[in-house]
Length: 262
Image (cartoon, rainbow, N blue to C red):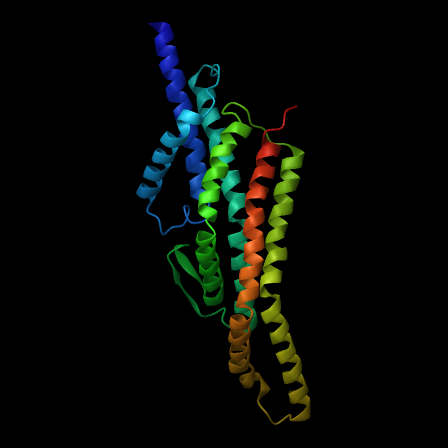
């Protein structure tokens, strides 16, 4: 009887650990972690996904005894899911950062509007870039590829095996730095055009001092910025296509680093 109870507890604890990793993953990932999805729906989706993945998860031979150890294992699985979700969201963060820079350069930083995805107010171009990236992400089935990475993670990182390492920390720092590099790439065509506009306005201010160049710059920046934004949209899509192809590779690299052994 005791052996049967121990076996039942092992199955239940394994399912609980799988659910913990899935929840941590869904909370942070693009699309699934968006505030457009109700929390109750997210929990229900996590339960369904955990039940689907659970039969294919290698069962641990035994779990360390004690509720404190089990709680620690649950916490580590949530951390694994959060790290995976964080890495997968970096491309979206880069798109938002690129849009934020354009808002500042075009003078639209004060024209903030409510955004349901962040439950706050964000600027217009930043929101536009984010939604374009989100739509294109679903068009290339990035959200399905993330589910595949989640399923593979249980083969790479066992439920009782996980560790942080200096290599993992450095990789997370490097990937976070890619947000700024990619954001500049995304906003560079429009920022370059606006820079040329500022040079032209500076020359006009010297040639014709009687002109109110300051007031002229506001509509001109918006006109040139929006025109270049539409013109550079294919470049933005092309950059996103390459980045989304790399995103899953980033997740797998981080998983391998978390699975390292001493």
